[in-house]
Length: 96
Length: 300
Image (cartoon, rainbow over all chains, first blue to last red; front, side):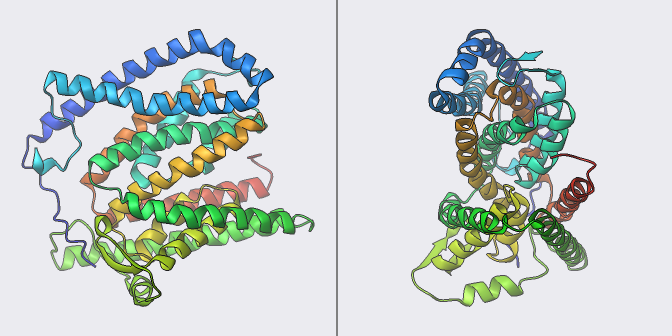
């Protein structure tokens, strides 16, 4: 069964995309670490208290933090890349 | 570093590394990776009651990151994932009920363990056999396509089921299929996942490819879409029981989020059969973990 999608041939500067991807990962990594320390600094104690006193709020808050980390930080990284005018390794390589 | 919720001191680097490794696997294969992360988490000192819940929490975030990346690459069929979720959720509940009913019998753990091993070994054998056959087809016929499946019999039979309503999934290249076939595939994977107590990614991904004829790359992305909801739901239920250390999950996610992006991006440089061939080793690792657990070498 052919899916009809042609094998991706790098028509774009492959090195540039990979370099941008590595920059993106580095930016994302720094944001993750900052987020983590901020969360740890300001939220560790309240979270531990919530865990002891109100599991329902703790559960919702916990899931919220995970989602925020996943969505918001990725959004900031994308924004930074657009702002800097760098191509992201997102669409098929041939389309860049 | 002290984790006040779980009440333990654990090296955060170890958590980041586990997260990263499982993140790469998740992004590349569309699996949650709990069968690998859980034993390692327990091994580095995460208390048993926090292992599964915390793993599910980080899995939710990691799957969101990988899903977003796969979606940008055009590797997600949200409509298909949404329909399958219905069957999966019902299936998970049925599987859990079956386990509860069986728990009265003493040997349920061994029976489930052996069933799990048999399924995983069968998935490994079938997927590796088919992937090698597809790779040979690609090479011998010099096909310039990204995906080819060497075994289409099941998908053809599924397409021939014409019970209305018929639906289409353009993102997966499916022109017409019975809605019930899709729900049934979700249901089957859900029942197995519920019975075996796993996320089911390594059952769902091959089923999407072989039963529904979904291209491998789209199967990976769509599987991740499902994991967001199943792992998110699992996180909530485990957190309500006090079994999630969210700080620990955030640490794991720092590594997992980066690993998931690398895994997701890597998929576009491999053909479908190549991804399936690599994937075929995963269930074998899962089976090995269960064998070690049954023999008492690992606790989780």
